[in-house]
Image (cartoon, rainbow, N blue to C red; front, top):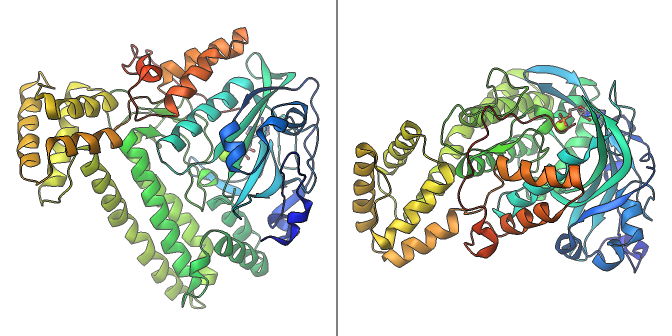
Amino acid sequence: MNPRSTKATPRTGWNFDNSYARLPGALHVRMSPEPVRAPRLVLFNRPLAGDLGLDPETLAGEQGTAVFAGNRIPAGAEPLAQAYAGHQFGHFTMLGDGRAILLGEHVTPAGERFDIQLKGAGQTAFSRMGDGRAALGPMLREYLVSEAMHALGIPTTRSLAVASTGESVYREDALPGAILTRVAASHIRVGTFQYAASLGDRQVLQALFDHTLHRHYPELATAANPAAALLRAVVERQASLVAQWQLVGFIHGVMNTDNMSLCGETIDYGPCAFMDAYAQDTVFSSIDQHGRYAYGNQPYMAQWNLARFAETLLPLLHAEEEQAIALAEESLLSFADAFQRFWLSGMRGKLGLFTREDGDLELVQELLACMQAIHADYTITFRDLTASVLADSPVFQDAACAQWHTRWQARLARQPQSGEDVRRLMQERNPVAIPRNAFVEEALRAAVENGDYAPVERLLMAVSRPYEDGPDQAAYRTPPPPIAGYKTFCGT
Ligand code: AMP
Ligand code: MG
């Protein structure tokens, strides 16, 4: 058990042990959140608080409000802003937590360690021209979508609370301000390594490397070449993560290297969105004018980011640069196979396939081509296919798509599992309720414009059990008419 556990306050349950704060000072700047005028706790994740070993009752009141707004530092926290760099849309920049403060690492009663970060907590040493603040809408959006991702079974940062600040933030208009409390296995990014490497100080890079290995991949500490092993493991986790995004139609929107977490969690919900009609080139983000982070590009961009990560590790991979590059390339090349393996295995599940056949990849590709041709809704199509297993009902009007349906049924008939088994597997793998743009926007509008949180709570309830098809999901089952020219905006 962690030696600092005596620090735990019995009433709130905070139990901080801040290993990142003990890393070399070049990696962070100690600083506290800026207090806000009139904090109000507008969303609080009681189940998550409970899982973390915090006391939901106490934190739902004044104690939690003060902490989640940045007005009070909980005992044991050592607040800081993390330094990092990153490639933003391909261009290298020095960044850092410009509007986030890491309170510290909370260790749960089970011994798990989580970063507790306040996003929108005021200006820091890394704010550049920014105000360090966040608007209420985008923070509610991150809360909704990150919790939906978690419920879908996809690794992600979590959202513990949103506190409104009673202050305005000035974007194009004056907007209500808010702070999100984000919970993450860590906030170590590809960009953190890029920053450390850019300093040209071997000791700082080594310290960050040791910290990351120990924290997220302790089993690799005894590997013959720990840097090569870490790179391989990070490649594997990212391949798995992006495969899971593709399988649910999630578009991150801003896959800059500072938004790729080394522990393999989805991080930084800015202009993200779920795809409605299936199309490889789907882009929502208003700032992604060239479609760099389009749905179909996500695996390639992940691999590009991993190459930037590999570059930072070269001095640790091998003393001879040529050998280091060869090792890096070998690991990077494993991405494509790993991605394909995770993705095809996930697609088999979505199509109710328990067995493997050589033609499965083609079967999946033909379905996707059909869907793209007829602009089929991605999520609904898989649910309709699920329903068709026992009902034997037609899913497609289009002749080519109907032919595909017949081939798929023949494929199902070649495996020993019953129709009931197939239906059950498909129900577990194909969500009913996802946070589609139109639902999210409608819910956010009620909260931001009228202070009515009922629609946010309703949507949250539905997407928290995305594979169920009960009364909570009913209103979110069918897609609303798409919003013409819908754009998502960066979460500022
Ligand atoms: P993001 O697009 O949220 O990943 O942020 C990219 C960079 O911009 C990070 O270094 C953020 O800390 C910084 N940033 C975003 N919004 C603000 C803001 N309102 N004030 C200061 N820095 C910001
Ligand atoms: Mg970011």
